Length: 366
Figure (cartoon, helix red, strand yellow):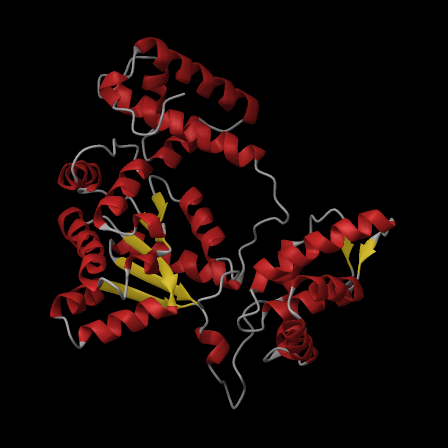
């Protein structure tokens, strides 16, 4: 009902009652409890009950705005189509662990993966956001990769007006976060750094560091490996950038275990085969065992696109299988989908790599 950036002072009682009515209807239709609603927006069940009954003595307008956004997010989530069901893969669990650490200790954490997409970082962050009461999540877009764009994105995530000067917005955000353990999740944070204008880009990192220092609210950063290299290079030239790096208490390389040789081995695969089975368990057409193993091996190949590539192949294979009236998807069909999806040289490289088992494959797939 309310547009992004709506000020709490402009919320009328009539509109508030409509939001309250919609929330009550959703609660009744889904069976969700008021306690769960309260957890998801960072309030208490008592506050939610009083606001919905219009008996709350505090700032009920701000709570109405929070409820309105929560309801909108719920509607979008309920109606969103999906090719596969999100599962807590080993990669997602690592991100979840770091998120729990920074939330409990009120620190800054950084998780990072390869430059290529597809290992499931963003989906895992969204899952963490959904299960962490009061958390806020933003994605750093290149078009807004500067202090002003960053603060406006954070303000929108916190349901704060993003109009005015950067300093004004910063003050509102600080006021909302100070003294709380509300987790601020920042995806694609590597977009804040720039080789063309390093000083300007670094200011955004300084803003995040200052926000952390002045509020004590935890932050979870997620980006690519080149951001870590950027920090390391910068530490040798710029003491202030080194200060930002030292504020990051937890740093987790999501690909590390794939490189950790154990007793002469080549490390662990990025995923278990059960991750693949769970991810596509609800696909409209069943995957045969050889198809599951093909996808597992493909997902574990560095720079293959991981689960993202697998999801695309399953989508293509599903369409073809439906057209042909097939009751299952096998490895042959997936290979054909792969051949149609990539350049010939890429197909040859991936096909050869899939033949070889992932590191420690026998032990992990038993």
